[in-house]
Image 1: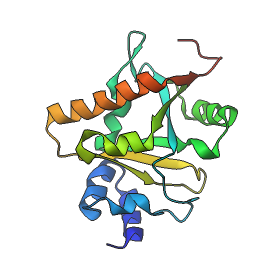
Image 2 (image 1 turned 135 degrees about the vertical axis):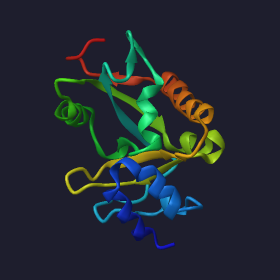
Image 3 (image 1 turned 120 degrees about the horizontal axis):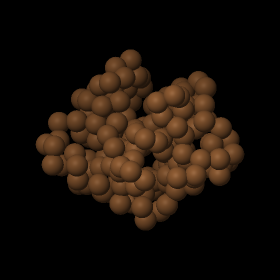
Image 4 (image 1 turned 180 degrees about the vertical axis):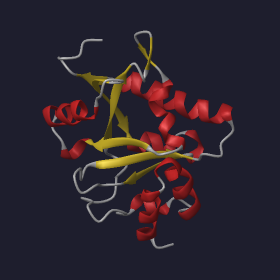
Length: 173
């Protein structure tokens, strides 16, 4: 397939993951630039940074696997760590908060680990935007059974717990 055809998936926000797995059956396009705004494909040695919001991603004061629920629908939005400094990333996070969710900080995700985990059921695509050239999406097969989706979310959450996060000094837990 021509990977530039994945651009059509951007229009199906809530079905982004399904669209990607339908059009890129073997996952090869995750190793190519699929966005005209891109600095290049997401490499296995990169670290992605995912914003954390409270209360959405917490049970009481503990981070939970809902941090990765978007993987199965619209894609779990992340930023590529190679291209941003911490202060700029915190600014982007604050810009995304609203009255229902408060920006807390971000967590680190190793791309190679994600791609190798869960029987290759996780893919990472360069989805750079005109206003955010560092954007990437983590997606997983939406048709996985509920128990397998939980396993994917928990695998990613345990990875985050191992690699830690960077929490904003303005947002104590």
